[in-house]
Length: 107
Image (tube, rainbow, N blue to C red; front, side, top):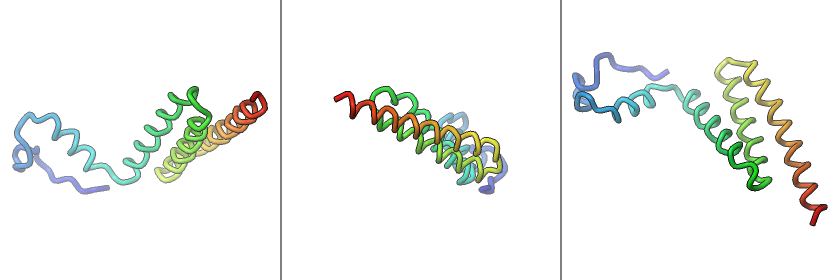
């Protein structure tokens, strides 16, 4: 975890008092790399899930997002989350192959 200096931002001379944008940046900088990786992996996974009806490649992207969030689960010590996400990765890969096969034979 990244050490955080005590005191508020204004007293440290880092930002004007009441600057809400600084608060968000300060929170992000205070996160450890595993947490930042987890947020990125889950955001990517949800984005791919939202777009998966548009093209089978988004289903593959969702599977990759599930694998990344599974890695995050294991890295953060939440191994049940990691197991569930790797199962979802398998489900998404199977769905990708079925949709891809159906689209190739339907043409």
